[in-house]
Image (cartoon, rainbow, N blue to C red):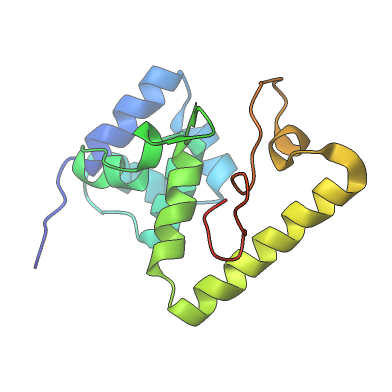
Length: 151
């Protein structure tokens, strides 16, 4: 299936404008050249995967929206009563693209980091990484094993 991506540049410019930032800032934050950013914004080139990821991160939007103008990522999904961010949605999308053996390794690594935070008395991985105070507990559900259930 071939999909032609049009208007990527228009969406990048639109997002830059809505955030009130300049192309020069995007260059600085992504490490991409001003020539590359200019060509993306004018539609002369479409960003490669790495560039698209960097741009979407700085612009706080999904890679899918930049490419297609549609957003079916996990932003609308809820985990522990909190909507998933674009970054979390992209993380899940990248995880799904991994072969099973790498998925297991990635899951084990995240679980290891989670356990270490809990053991340090932080209680919840969410509170360890969140600057906001929210009444939600992240982690395996009551009676669930994190190695067989989603956290």
